[in-house]
Image (cartoon, rainbow, N blue to C red; front, side):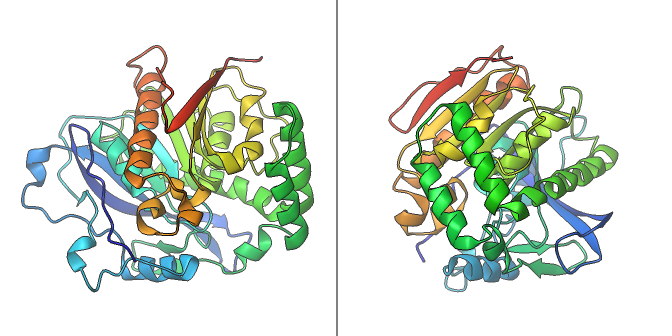
Length: 374
């Protein structure tokens, strides 16, 4: 396993962190559990002078490392270098008294984990946002609760993603190469998911409820640090990006959102996107997100990264050495541009610092804008 180069947050603040667990009264519908428990990690701005002498939070617990290795067959070896197992944030660092910051809710991907995009979440928080990263029990490689209990992922998930597997994989591969308008490609994806991806479609409503449970807790318990007046931003990777899209389309609390390379699994036949949205993709997955570009009443932005693979849009980009899995793009370049896009977007549509974001093409990412079509 290669040595991890942990990115330093670039904002004016240091970052504190803590976790909370919501014991929801919702019955688990897909797994062998009585009730659905939701766990979340909070990243929040703190004064840099307030963290002097404080230890940094651990990057990955032993259970997380086990889950990571089980899912990806490789994992960071912190036994050889325990000092490397740190995150650029501080557990329970003192909050800034009297200060409130806008909220971004983040969702990891299927078979990722609550801290799976910690590098991005920490950098966003360092620029004056509270970021709540929501965990999804049994669908994260390991989900840890505040009472000390934990669950690993359901190993049957990979078999449930496409049923039957062979037909689903072949159909999705053909879709990656398909030609047509956004409307035509969105219809092809919808036909494919309804035939092969009933499990994935059925999980979207549960992930939405996970966010609503985590948000309800935040409204009751964290209103001393979160400014809810301007609404909430959403972001997420893979299935978490799909969830961000659904939250913006269906929940009035959310005012803008970003999807990191997530296929639009779910029934969106009655949805219109009424919030500013950004789709970040790699070339492989351009044709599974076309739904984002149609039926919207606010601007939609497209950011297409070169030399990227799906898994690379998470911290795994810095941890997994196989470029066939995470893409050839340099990890630091990916991180720098990913953070830049998020901040430009949220500074405009959540903080209201600008009337609209100003995006520029580069040799790393190509930008497009889809004006409202409704």
